[in-house]
Image 1 (cartoon, rainbow, N blue to C red):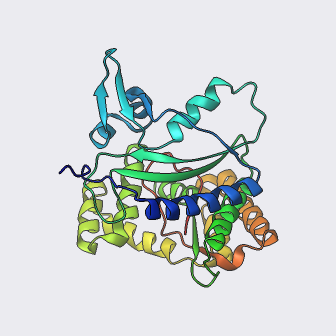
Image 2: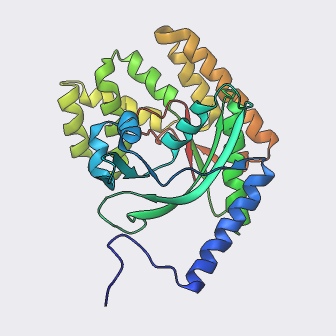
Amino acid sequence: MFEHLPGFRDFYPEDLARRNHLFGIIREVVKLFDFSEFDAPVLEPLELYLEKSGEEIASQLFHFTDQGGREVALRPELTPSLARLVGARAETLKKPIKWFHLGEHFRYERPQKGRLRSFFQFNADILGESDPAADAEVMALLISILEEFGLGRDQFRVRLSDRVIWSLFLESRKVPEDKRSHLLGIVDKSARRKPEVTKEDLEKLLPGESDSFLDEVNELKAIQGVEGVIKRLQSFSTADGDTADQRAVDWQRLISQLESLGCMETVDVDLGIVRGLAYYTGFVYEA
C-alpha cells in the first residue's frame, strides 16, 4: 500500500468540499474589491527564484534538470512569476494593476504543524500605486475575508508595522549598510527566542553595543498608537528629515483611509513586526 509523500496531503471529497468552500469565499470577496484573477505555470526556471532570493534558497526548493537540460523548480511563491508577467507587458497594462491568485505552492522544508511541503496560498497584489491607500485597501480586503469566514471583529486583530521606521532607526545609529538586513532578521526572531541568544547574535554584529541597541529596539516595540509613531518619526528628523517627515504623512494618510473604510477598530500599531527579508520595504501587517 502506497502512502502520499511527507509534507503532502490527500483531499477526500468531504475535505475538498471544505477547501473549495473557503476558496469560494475568498474569490467572492476579492472580486468585490475589483481584483482580477490570474495564473502562471507551477514549474518555472530555477533562476527566477535565485535572482530574487539568492543561491541559498535552492535548498528550500523542489528543483531538478528537465529532459531539455533546463534547471527548473516548482514554485515556492508567486511574486517572481507575477513580476515576470507584469514585466512582459509593463507598457500596455493599465495602472494600478490589481491581480489575485489562489493556488498550490511547494517548499522542500521539514514538515511541521501548519507548514507542509505542499500548501495553498492566496495572493492579492496592487502594482503601480505608491499611495498608502493601496495598503489600506489590501488591509480592508484581509479584514473582509476574515469576516466572511465568520469571525467577529472581537476574534482577530490586524497588527500594523513599518519597515521604513526600522530603516530610519538603523540609520540614526549609523549601522553599516551591510549589517542592516542581518540585524533586522535578528530583531524579527527575538520574540521567539531566548533573550541571551538574541544578545549573543547582536554582540557579534555590534560589539559592545548590544545592550544599548536592544534597549532602543524594545522602546520601538513598545510604541502604541499613531501619535507615538509620529513622535518617533519626528525624532529621526536629524538623520533623514525628508524621509521621516514624508513617512509621518504616509502614516496619517494610511490611518485616515483605514478609518474611512471602517477598519481601524481591528487594527493595532505593533512595531514588533519587523520582517528580516530585504524585499519588505514599507508597511507590513498581519492578522
